[in-house]
Structure formats: C-alpha cells, structure tokens
Amino acid sequence: MTPAPHPQVTEIFRRIGVALPSTDGAGLLVRSRSPIDGAELARLPVIPRDAMASSVQRLKGAQPAWARLPAPQRGELLRQYGLLLRRHKAALGQLVTLETGKILQEGLGEVQEMIDICDYAVGLSRQLFGLVIASERPEHKMLETWHPFGICGVISAFNFPVAVWAWNAALALVCGNAVVWKPSQKTPLCAVAVHGLLRQVLEASAPPFGDVSQLWLGEAEEGQALVEHPDIRLVSATGSTAMGRAVGQACARQFKRAILELGGNNAAVVCASADLDLALRAMVFAAVGTAGQRCTSLRRAFIHEAVYDPLVERLKQAYASVAIGDPREAGTLVGPLIDGRAGEAMQAALAECRALGNAVTGGEHVLQDRFPGACYVRPALVETGEQHAVMLRETFAPILYLCRFSDLDEAIALNNAARHGLSSCIFTDSLREAERFTSHLGSDCGIANVNIGTSGAEIGGAFGGEKDTGGGRESGSDAWKSYMRRATNTVNYGRTLPLAQGIRFDL
Image (spheres, one colour):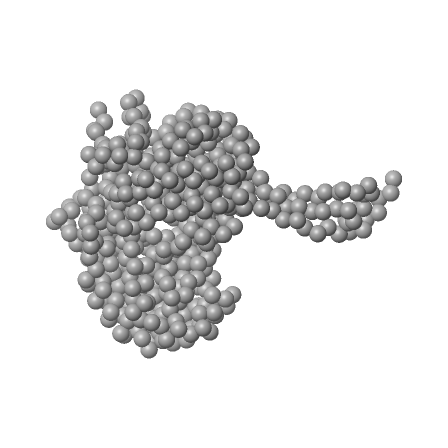
C-alpha cells in the first residue's frame, strides 16, 4: 500500500484545490523527498507508455482548434491563469520551498516569475507581428508571417521547478501550440500543483481546450520518450550540458527544433573603480542564493589586484556569518543542497582544489545533528593563483573561486575561457570598462551585466547563453519566435509575372 502524502503536502493541495494523482493500480512510482530534512513527501505514478501515446493523441486533437482561436483569446486564458497563481502564491511558494529547499523568499519569487510571464504573454498575444518587406518586382510585396508550430515538449530541472516551465508554456500556448511537460523527477509535486491550476482555468473557461497541456511524470526514460516521439516537433530542455547534448542529438536525428538552456560557469569581474559595498552584496547573493544551485549562480570572480585583499576579506566575513538553516524559517539565507550526491560533488571539487594548493574557506557540512537526512553546507571560497581545470568545470554547489587580475582584457579572456557562456557581470564605475565588457570585444555570454550579479534575470529579456549552455533563448524579447513557424510570402497584385533577378522565361 502506498503511504499517504506528507501532511504539509496534503494541506497545500487542499488549499489550492488540486487533487494529487491516484496511485491505485499504478506501476512505477516516483518519490518526492524534501531536501530540508530528507522526509518523503509523496509517491506519484510514472506515466506508462500507453498513456504517453494517448496523451499525444489528445494533444494532436486539441492543438489545431487552439491554434484557430484568436491569439488575444488565448492570452485571456493566460491572464486568468496568472490571477489564479496570484491567489495561491503563498501556498505555491511554500511548496517550492518544501520540495527544492530554496528559501521561502526565493520560492515566492519563483511563483512571481510565473505570474510575470503570464502578464507578458497577455500583451504578447496582440503583438505576434511579422514584417512587410520591399520587393524588387513591380506590383509585388513580400511578407514575413508567423504561425503555430504544433506540439512543444518541455523538460525542466529541479532548481526552478515551476518558473522555467511557465516561461516555455506561456509563450508556446499563446503562440497557438499544445504543450507536454516532463518535470524533474526530484520535483514532481510542484509540477502537479501548477499544471493542475492551469487545467482548472482551461476546463472552466475553455472546456474544448482542456487537453492542450499535458503532464508526464517520470524519470529519465520518460524524458527520452518525449524527445523521441515523432509528433513532438519542438523540445525545450533545461538541465545539465550532458543532458542537453543528448537531447540535441536526438532532436537532430528527426530534424526537430531544440531550445537548450543548460549549464553555466558564470563569472564576475571586479574592477579597481568598483563600488565594493554594491559588489559584495551582489556577489554573495549570486553565489550562495539557492545554495549555489542556479544555472546563473556566480562561480568565478576575477578581482583587480588593487581591491582584491579588502574585498576577499569582506567576502570571508560574509560567508562566515551567512545564515544557513531551514529555508522555511525567517532569516535563513542558505538552505540545503538538493541531495547527498550534490554534497559529494562539492566535497570532491574542494579536495581537488586543496591538492592544487588552493586556500579553501568554508565548504564544511553543517546542521548534521538537526537534519541527519539532509545535506547542508557552508558556502566555500577558493583562492587560486590561476584558473585551473577544476575551476573551469561547473560544480552545482556554492563554491566561488577567487582570482586576481591586473588588466581588463586579461579578465575578459579568463571569463571567456569557460566552455559555458550563460551569464557574466562586471563591477566598475568606468563607462569605458562597462562598455568594453558588454561589447563584442567583451564577455561572450548570453547575459552580460553591469553592476549587478549574474543571477536574478527578469522575464522581459531573452534568457539563455552560448557554447555549452546550448544557444537557446527563453522568456522575453523575441524568444516567442522559437515557438512559431516562420513563412515568407510573396504577393503579386498585378497582371504581369516579372521574375526575380531579372530572369526572362518567355513562353
């Protein structure tokens, strides 16, 4: 007999009015555990293969009619979804914290990202515009138009269990697509909750379109099935570079479109003119927020030799005093790592650094007596004289490597030496330094900030990066175009048939 869900889970789902899926007669189950204390939260049914097939058939049945619905009407349904998220923001934020271990402020912030992208999609629903292009032929015009793509698959990671899906789903839906979501096996409850609320809106306000969004719970095998299904023509995947490489190759075999948002080995450059008070706050949040488990977490810092010693001393003081503990408690700034494997990877990286002669501050396990089934660590600082292989390898944990520099071009080269190209930032009061860093001569990352950290992106800008980060873009700006099919149309409104390039073909 399957154990009952954790009481906190039962209460949250009661408050939001979403039913947990039944495990009666289920085959495989996925277990959700809280990284806060290691307690099991619930067991949920893995979608069987025959259910995947029927799910895709429902998506195929719903999508054409959904695409025919005027985009502003699709936007109206997302507006209603945003209102429902606002109503349940507190409960959903608590669930995110319970299942991921991020502090409650960050859990609430993640739900706010969902609300923001719904608002964005409402406006976008009246702005899915194309182009009118001048034609070289008389009495002709050229148009660029955008059309729904079809069925879009979304694979999301544990560290942002609801926001990243919302970035993709809100845009894909408002663009006229159907969506199937395979969430991380570590955070299935968050997925069931927010997807259940979306289904509430669709079934209450637009019953014919209740099947336009589907949820597949499971492990890596279910994600692979999503990627390989021939009717799912677009896959947006967020996760590790290794996972993204496998997804990209599988999509390429079927000439599918892939949107890949993968890892990041993000750096800060702190110049001699930097406001150190501002830099300190920004760097600590970027490095230890979400316990260093954001794809945009700060992992490398190149500090000008003129300010290296005072800034590093202040960083050490901040790291020694930062509040680590139960993320549900007020005042906590750093919660647990997602699981013991993440802690082992962190300790292995720090051991390699010590073997290289680097000075390591912090990094030890804490709170083991209070939470024996969890993995809490003190964030670590690693001082190194050079950028070595360990530093250039992404470790998904709160490790910040510190290195001196004397020349800005040297720091830019160090920033760009990483295989990933997601986020970067510079702290400076020099206009020339800021402009150089954000120019084509500067950072090669998809995100290059000035006087703010590497994390905490807003939904208005396109999110993503280059190189081993995958090259995909999600969220704002013109990222919506990734979820649509582009067509070029040439219209002849005259009575003659002039050919392009002056070609003559007389019959």
